[in-house]
Image 1 (cartoon, rainbow, N blue to C red):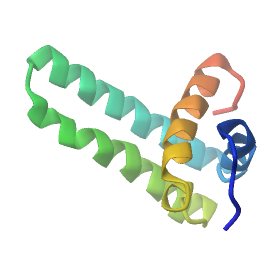
Image 2: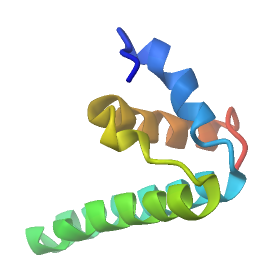
Image 3: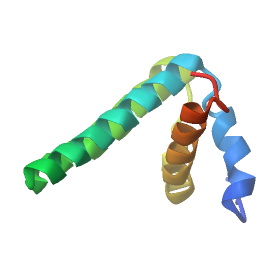
Image 4: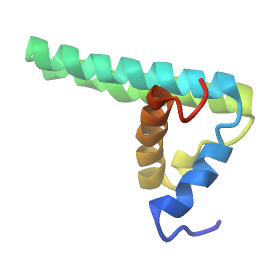
Length: 100
């Protein structure tokens, strides 16, 4: 297992693990639903909604990896960098830097 000394060093690897467009789309949908659940929980002032955020976020992403990428999610090897990578990729998709 390779070690990364910074997120800047890790992120190109993270993007290479998301080369399949369907995988990236599933990540985007899952992250969007996770954000929606957090908003609903805040508006409803009901934390019981929050258990759905990781279910949507990781569920959609892992389907993308196992079905389309045919690889093991980076979360299993680099959990913190991977979580950061999810949100940086999400922002890069919104900015048009990463194709959806």
